[in-house]
Length: 133
Image 1 (cartoon, rainbow, N blue to C red):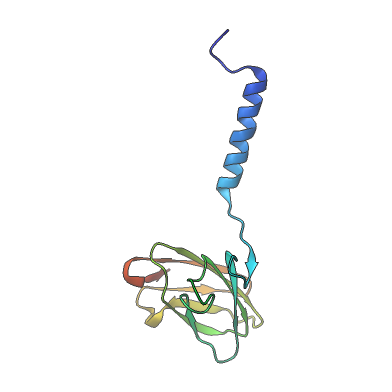
Image 2 (image 1 turned 45 degrees about the vertical axis):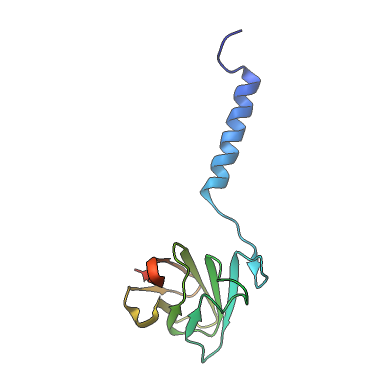
């Protein structure tokens, strides 16, 4: 018997490789406010201007990598307490079409403008430095 793959095995290997590559390309998250949500919805009112990634999502753990900002946010959102090594994606699902800017408190490590219904990413470096830009 030759050492190569038979036709059926080759098709099976190709299908497995395609399935693996397809799942490696994109992540899928549970959206909501449950403890197992990978994309957590944080509601903003007219007064909320700070997003605390340690406390605004769950009582017992940090916000997941995707944070959906809903409500009436406008202007600059100061983000604090990020988790080292996490690439955060912020989604602006706000009611106001002006857009927002997300940044580490004080804007020391850059900022990211996010239009209404847009997304922006920031990386949490060592010592809670949220780098946006």
